[in-house]
Length: 437
Image: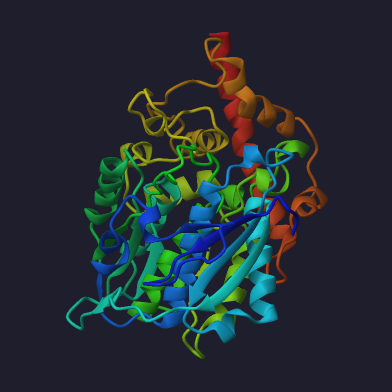
């Protein structure tokens, strides 16, 4: 590490503060919500193992560090050196070479930064973070639910599974968009279905660090926080698998331009990310206790996910009410109260998927990327997409940015991208005809 290293210390319990002034202390009070709303208020059918609590604490500490250390303060205005100290229950398990390899690789993959994680003993916790209640319904399946097209499609599909035990959806609240998220959840819950569909809302909203400095605008570790939160919940329900539904196009998320390679493109559900996350969990979990994370939509394009949603009984209106945007207008001060901007890459993929499934897209967007009235900087994704579609793309291009784990079929992954390109090409045709009119 160099002198530009940012030292972040996650406080444990009483008397567990940093002794060196270089360390910036963070902890439970770094979030806007009270701790009880994050973990303590939930009652589960069984206890949460220490390794799952530790994993969630590490992810929370990483997330706070990611928001408090601004990229603009680094030499290249992107790459940061972060040294993080986190207390854990079983220090021996966390200090192994395998954990260090999988965790640092995972964080570098997600953020593009240089991370060094120190683990220390967790002092006695006087408050039980999660209560076990045997009267609570025990789910047989756990999935992340964002209020987006992919998670809604998967929830609707699994609601019809022949299973007497509930499907549990873990949802992290989006500021200003909770009403939309709940409305999308109701679309799945009100279907004619075989099993109960339960919703567990969780909150993780960082507050300012007290110095007056604005939080970092990028948030590459948010997906890790969500995944570990769902793993924690699944461990209490005795469910061995967590589903993170993301269409194969955006899971692989090929860089549209060389400038968007590596962590400059979101990699939260990339197969290589899930590979290292699963390896990390296997290393720290008790024997037979591990929870595996799977993307059940990895072989589908956005359009194919939309078709599956319609087949599960959802309507075109249900699909159009979802959230797909990377930067929803509702998050921007003074912006219109719309869920989807219409011009970011996730919105463009969404447009192409709905066009394939419904031959139209009635979503109310903030802007049309091909409209002359849209400011030039906001059309960057649209212009990059056009260049990408008009350029040849091979399996070599797929592997250049990030490797794929051994259990992923390269030909299948490449075929998903090719089918997705065909859907996006149709969007270009629609834009051309709209402009001509």
